[in-house]
Length: 431
Image 1 (cartoon, one colour):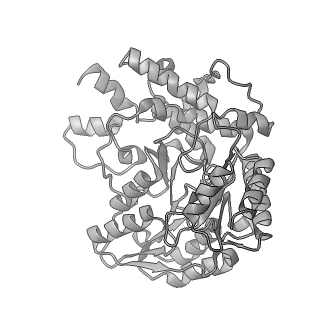
Image 2 (cartoon, one colour):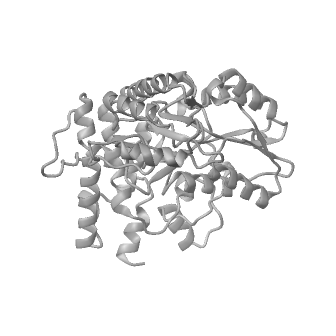
Image 3 (spheres, one colour):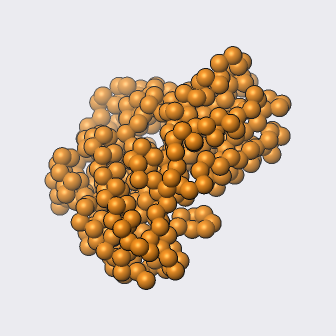
């Protein structure tokens, strides 16, 4: 084994996560960057290279990175270009540093986290690897995204399990936490093994009460054999980084998310956290130490861990290693402050749009049932045309990738109250 391969093989091991995290040094700001005051929202916005003339309501689509993340990417890229054996700061386990930072951010054990390239990869690893027994089934909803629907379809093709879709609400603006939980409870069967849900629906902006669902499932699982327990699997990408909840707050069994959306981390990064890895088989060979040791010894399959489930191969390491700065950036601001800011701006936006006669909101008013996404329709205007015309008014929005599509806004740490008011005024003029 070459020296380079041996080093890279250890990157996913996570064995030095605690030491590496404690010895990591802050990434300096690039020359000419404004100073960063995490208590000042103007200073927070100034860390991004976004054009300040525009109201940025689609930053979550493929998020820009703040200055410290951009600088970390540059530093790692230059290091790798200069030396293929480069390891940041001489750290023998930079992936372990990332895992340690991610674990602290979500309140988890770093050994329960698999690093991925996106939410879709995480869901693919989960649903392609879940081990189902004959007669077990899968419950999901009509409101989920392609990554979940296709993931469970492929799971069904592989295992023969039946997949059932239920409807959680007819009018998303009037969604009820009690009704959502009841609909899932009514959809359960004695052999339901997988409950595949999405934390915040990208189709409507509805945020599911994941904790209440988890509590309901805990009751339903009482008396079931461990291998028959219903597993709560969550696509968390539009809640992660916008809502402060950690994995203990959510109570789910698996959480897949990208870190290049509401966390404003490096593009092409994400993770899959789980508390029931024994229910999953690895899909892609891992490059962690355990994988190499087993391979060199010609040993049989090992018990699944997050490390074994982490896809091997060489990655865009300059992006992966910069995830640490993304977590630290939000920690410096404060997860609770970010949630309050995101939801206060969303509430302001919803209130303004609600007063426009030709606008129909589809996102609930309640902050308990929404996050940063605000979806609506405009009478007589297709969403794609609305996006184009709003852009002409320096308001950047998006459409939902569903049928029928909706006009979609996203409030975040790169938004300010003035730009919310600008967006409301621009929508008012659309006819």
